[in-house]
Image 1: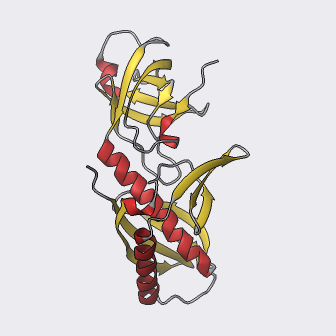
Image 2: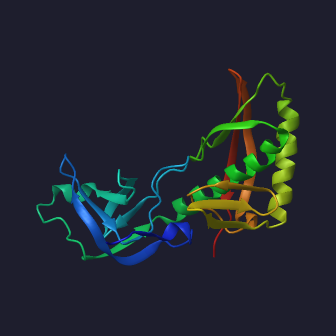
Image 3: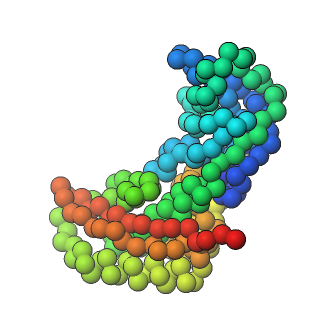
Length: 227
């Protein structure tokens, strides 16, 4: 049985791979899909948006199917009368490196937000790491929050952690992948992350909103320039 190897879990910066088709087909609307043996595409999940990229030069849209495979819809191939690529067919996959880096920076920054806010005793109830709307949500439990003071405190803590180049690592325990910001926080996660916090820039609180018994901590982050 062919198993799928997810390269994005071990190398955030792997953005191109020559591999083979492991599974393929057409969906009910006629769109061709493939699942690659060596997969570099992160599908949407865990609050992180899907990667963007191509397979064989065709736009690829990743998703996770009911069997747990990451499959790539190829909408441009749906108009082609050619056969669906057979298992074993060679394929070159590429993801947009700039988008990948931004998603990784935002996801790691979200963990950093939670590392510090959770220390204050707030219970995590949701999150999104999408560009322009990244946030982490908490239950307030009737607590009062000084939003200005909390914003100042968090921004200062972000700066200190980034300057310290705090390591970010991943390991598997009992079949679960855990991501750790060294000395600060560990949580289960299947997303992409930077290797240490020096890869982050402009980690800032965008807003703190309180409504309906919840506190929404909006944040921003960028990936450091690459050479």
